[in-house]
Image (tube, rainbow, N blue to C red; front, side, top):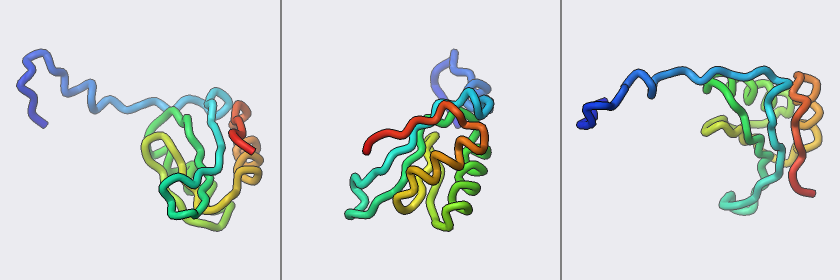
Length: 103
């Protein structure tokens, strides 16, 4: 990467985000249908931490629900409506500050 700014610090951009402990995370679990051609997904947002830890949590959730999904931009998308199940799984994993959003 190249910058014309003489004060630009490349080191700051590459600094790894430290993942906070599960009981300190404030995750939100909701159902989303926007721009998905009528298909529902379960959206887990608010994750604070590294991309690797986000992907690992996504892998666990997708595996326990038996479906696909993705993890990026501090959000996990799980295909289908699994809000209650994911809420329960997150609590079992120690994510006790999790909130269910919407009906």
